[in-house]
Each structure stands twice: as C-alpha cells, then as structure tokens.
Length: 103
Image (cartoon, rainbow, N blue to C red; front, side, top):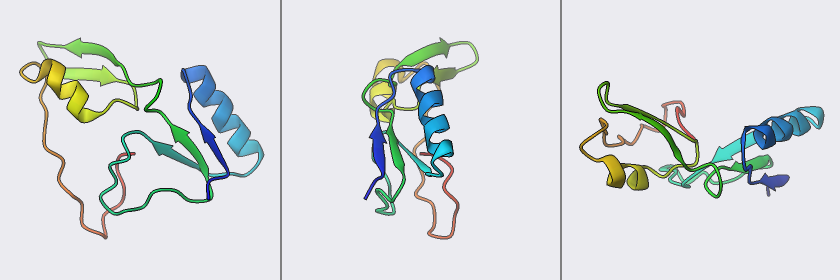
C-alpha cells in the first residue's frame, strides 16, 4: 500500500513532496501513464502522480526534432499533435534483468 499519493501541480509541489518524503524516510515512486510492462504498480512509497496536472508539452524545436515535456505527458497524446515534427521511437519492452530507465 502507498504511504501517500501526491498529484503535484507544479515544480514547487514536487520539491515540497520530495522534501517531506526525505524528512520521513519515505521512498518516492513517480507515476505518469501507468504503462508498466512488468506489472509493478505501487509499493510502500509516496506515489507521485504527474498525469493529472504536469502533462504539458513545454517546448518543441522543429529544426532539431526534439521536445521538452512535463513528466506526466502520455506518449500517444504527444505524438498525435506533432507526429511529423519530432522524432518518435517505439518503446521496446526491456528484458526482466534491465534496470528501469523511465517512470
């Protein structure tokens, strides 16, 4: 069971949640689209759900083909708007022995 669930609205909320978790010795489990391929969902951590408020495209550089996004953006929503603008790669399911590289 999660110790707490936080839906930060901005970077200030994220900082406050991280500070609170550190003060209480609680780990943080960041979440966005909930697309875990391994089935791991929650633990005894502070769940930080970015999908509700921090889900915006902040900047798109068409010439260099990159985008700066908030952590809660869902890939399908982002590619729908600029499919031919920014390089998008298909996610490759990692093997069970691979470390997690994205939340």
